[in-house]
Image (cartoon, rainbow, N blue to C red):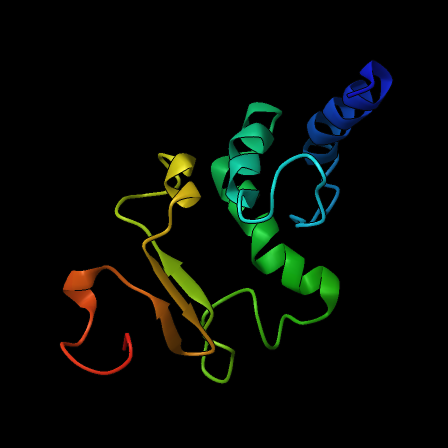
Length: 124
């Protein structure tokens, strides 16, 4: 990566949080393969965000900036019920989000560990 570009990214990730600039977590990165998106979270913290602010940038803040806060970004009645679960507190260890064992989308379980699956039929 070009040094000037790297410096600009570093400046933005450090200055942005200090200036209360809203930033949404994105998935259009060309730096790593699709599906590795959670690996960006520790970098966001390393460059000045708190773990909670980094997670909010991928949930509530992203929904607000897209104008979708009435549908996604948090769990509430009438929303899509998209969620993940990890075995621990991601605020203490953001790396937990790199290997998510439980995924629910639209209220339907898409991925779950064997001990959470029904003996027959679909995952949930």
